[in-house]
Every structure is written in C-alpha cells, then in structure tokens.
Amino acid sequence: MRTRIYFGFAIRATAGIDGNGQKDTCVALGGHLKQYGDVLSEGLMGKSSSGDLNSEHAYNRDLDWLRNSDFAVFETSVPSIGVGYEVRDAEVWNIPVLCLHRNQDGKRLSAMIEGNPNPTIVKYDTLDQARAAIDLFFGRALRKT
Image 1: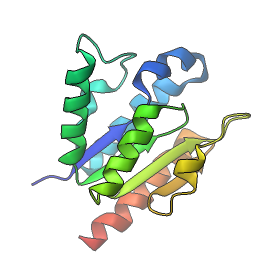
Image 2: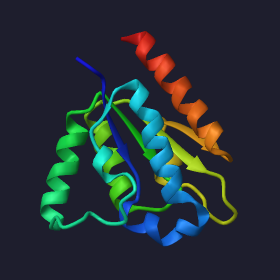
Image 3: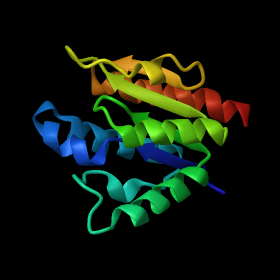
Image 4: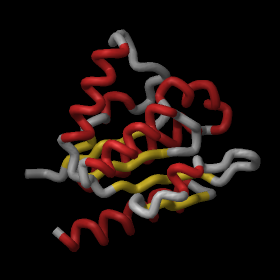
C-alpha cells in the first residue's frame, strides 16, 4: 500500500496573500509531496476556500483524511486556527508531522507550534529549501519503516 500523506495549509486565508506567492507555494509543495505517496488532501491545493461544502462536511472530511494518514505536512506561514487544530490532532494520533514555515518579516510561527517538541519544524526562505526539507523528512521517516 502506498504511503498516505495529509497536506494542510490555510485554505481560506491563502488566497488573501496570493501576491506573496503563498498559493503557488502550497500547490508546488503539494505536488512535490506526491513523489512520496498519495496526498489525501490533493483536491484542496490551489483552492481559496473549502468550496461548496458546508463547514461540518469540510471538518469531517479533513479530519478523516488526517486520521487515515501515515504522515502529515503543514505549511504554517499563514496563521490558521484550523491548521493548528490539525497539527494537534496529528500529534494525538501519533502521526509524524513536518511543519514548514516561510521566513517573512513580521510573520512569526505560532509559539504553540514552535514550542512543541514533537513536530519537525523547518523554516525556509525559498521553495527549493522547503522541497529539500520534505526530502530530508521523508528520507529519514521512510528509512525507519
């Protein structure tokens, strides 16, 4: 069976900073993840909202994807209560987590994520650095299995 990956990011807020390239970054990172397995949340990449789904359906769908994942990767550069919630659930469910956070003036990673010793946290400046962090994370994680 192929590895199942949940890729989480601030869907509703990402469109608001499209001028900073965050939407394109999430699409690129999600595409890069596909070499390591099935990205369960692939349909969300490039979207600026949860679509036509009501909030309850989106909640249940996303947590079902996360619960059934072998790994979770989160892009945390855009603050999101939902992403923080998902990071915590992944921790409770013992799912290995990689958090990617783009260095930006005035945009710090949440202290609740940064202070947590469980996820792997990588701060990056370029898309190539974020891709390299994904490669390193999965290279280490997949050797353990």
